[in-house]
Length: 191
Image 1 (cartoon, rainbow, N blue to C red):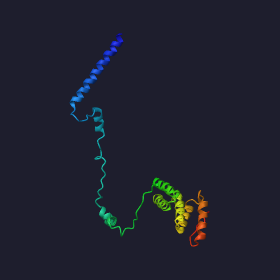
Image 2: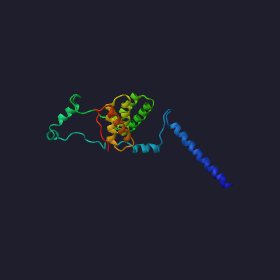
Image 3: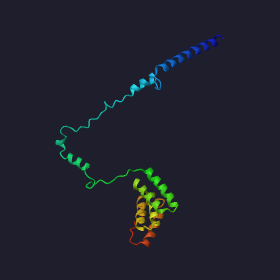
Image 4: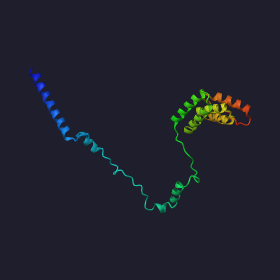
């Protein structure tokens, strides 16, 4: 009995202290403001940015102009017009986008929308230029839209990438078929 009354007293004393601390916190903060606890404030101070300590000096060395007299020409070239530039547009290599374009192209192909499929396979080759499946399926689409020379080019590209691939026999048959229709088309013999 004594233990039970002792536990109850300790619990009541603990609850009264917690409620008085909470009441004090509620009265000390302004209405509408959220108050941070002291422990989170201390950790916040430890997270202050040290970027001033890690700044990198990007100014050129004092004798840079003397050691690299043509460096201003490179700057002018990089800021010059696009007409005199030999840099071509680059596309990011993104195999996930290429796979998605192939998937959508397959959807269009099954629905006999060969022009739509053709564009999606071309997009896939933009993001992953040496994709064997995209080359093969693009060749199939080009056959369907009556572009045999382009089809030959992409069947050959497939055979160049995967000469013994799962679709190599089909690509070889298609090349032979296209050769009989168009004798001027270049044919690569896959080994």
